[in-house]
Image (tube, rainbow, N blue to C red):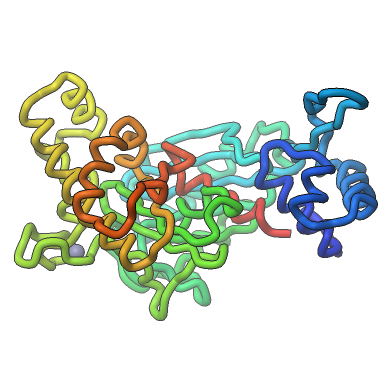
Length: 364
Ligand SMILES: [Zn+2]
């Protein structure tokens, strides 16, 4: 499939980027915000409308004279698929150019480092695509994996969750029915966020394991050996609880979703229900969790001095608890007077699958 826009001019590319990252805009706003002359905006937006990439979506309220037409992206211009691989499941989404999830599935599939798994994954992707009326408009399949990836060789260098080291992802990719792209799960979740809003930011992915991602100057920062953002293994309490990595006192042992659960049978949904029911033990566990999370957040804020996006399974529940969390953060952080840097994630569920799909929608 060809790129979204071929041989686009600089002005056109900036206009398109602006329209993609703002739900609604106008020609006057484009001219003002991008510092472009009105004739430049007019000719370029007309061209984008002709190509079908941009649509006139309505009219702005006006105090008099002609009403200004508002512009928005044509959401059904193209699509991308995202697959999120975990040890026992595959989450799949279809995302449109407007970033909306149009179809989602979650399938139980136990990961195994063999051909049979790769073939099953390819079959799942094929079945998902089959019957989609927009099948021809799907640009590619982004695959999110829980582990450290080397992009040059498409190798999964290390994954505790999948129990792997130095595993080539090429076979898995080549069996997929469309162009593919692999990304670490936390980096993928960062990609789900609006790049216009977060040029510099840190993403804290509070899932069964604790992941993180760093975005600098609008780009993911991977680090010297692809380990940037592994916040889960920063030591929060020396000599503390044993982490799955073998060390003691890692942030993962305190701030991953598992820290909230009573035993292996317990689930985060059940925990949140007990919390709503004011169960005393659950409240105590939640208070301690938020306190540990506040320490981690404060440490990250001191290092990066950027917005901190709270994502992952626990992050999805945090919008209802920002006051409690904020009070604790303020107790540890004596430098910031407000908490505007604490942000809730844009996608409460399936952020990694959505983000890795968006990789294809941002190409071009
Ligand atoms: Zn650890």
